[in-house]
Image (tube, rainbow, N blue to C red):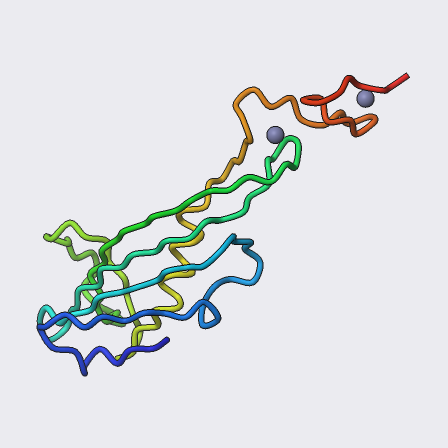
Length: 150
Ligand SMILES: [Zn+2]
Ligand SMILES: [Zn+2]
């Protein structure tokens, strides 16, 4: 979903994204996704984006492969600015909000939410700290049964 930034005013405008518009195909989820974003103009060259993402991801344990549900309620704020080619470099963001750079006058909200999905997905997934995983030899789930290796 693309929003033309220059059409925004100082009054916040709300956007709701439909799942099919943006949800990454390679990510498994349970139930519905809620993705909403409020956008408003800050000044001639920057905008404020506050978003909320609610979804339950279905992840697999890295050790035993068991599936587990990972509920996400992610609220985030970005300051959106147009990337200046050959600009004077590092500008400090006084509002302490993360910066989201766009190359033209349009902001692709789908891209923002896809990025959030990867940011909220854990790098390591364990069903439990104590998960014993699968035996590399016989494939037995060592949480449930003893190893059958000879
Ligand atoms: Zn496990
Ligand atoms: Zn074994």
